[in-house]
Length: 198
View 1 (cartoon, rainbow, N blue to C red):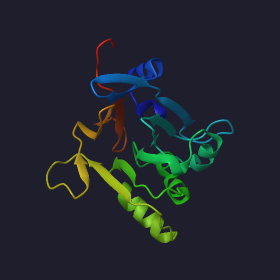
View 2 (view 1 turned 60 degrees about the horizontal axis):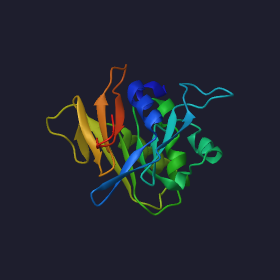
View 3 (view 1 turned 90 degrees about the vertical axis):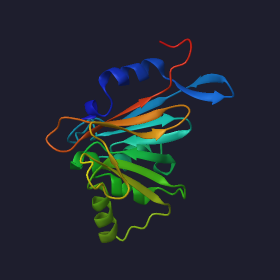
View 4 (view 1 turned 45 degrees about the horizontal axis):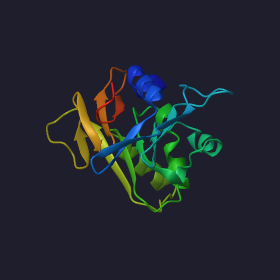
C-alpha cells in the first residue's frame, strides 16, 4: 500500500507546502512539488490501480513503486514513462514491481534511469529483460539496498536502519527499513530548511 512510501506526516507536509527549493546564488526560491497517485491498492479494482506514485520535483519525474498497470496509468496522467528519471521500489512483491518491465520498455529517453530498491531487484529485471528480449535505449543504473554491512556487493547501499540515496541543493532522498513480512524500505524526500520556513 502507498501508506509506507512516505510517512503520513511527511506526505501531509509535502502536500501542504507543495514546495521545493532551487538555489540561485544565495537566494532560495520555492517551486511546485507535484504528487500524482497512479495507484494505491494492493490488488487492482475497476476504480483503483496497484501501488505507484509519480512525484515531479526540480524538473524531474520520479516513481515510487511501479505495480502492474503503471504504464497504462501513466498514459492517463500528466506524466510519461519517457520523463521518468528515478524509480524507488519499496519491496519486491508483485503489486510493487510487476509494472517495471513495461515502463522500462516504453521509456523512449536516452538519459540514464536510476532505480533504487531492495536486494533482488537487479536480478528480477535482468531475468525479465533477458527472457523478453528487452533492450533499453538508455543506461539503467540499479542501486540495491541491503541490510547486512558485511561484504556488500557492488552497486549496493547499506541501509540499516537508514541511508541517504540522493543529495541535491534542493532536496535529498533517504531510505529507511520498515517492518513488513518481507524486506521493505520507505523513502522520505526532504528539502533543506531556510529562513522563513517552519
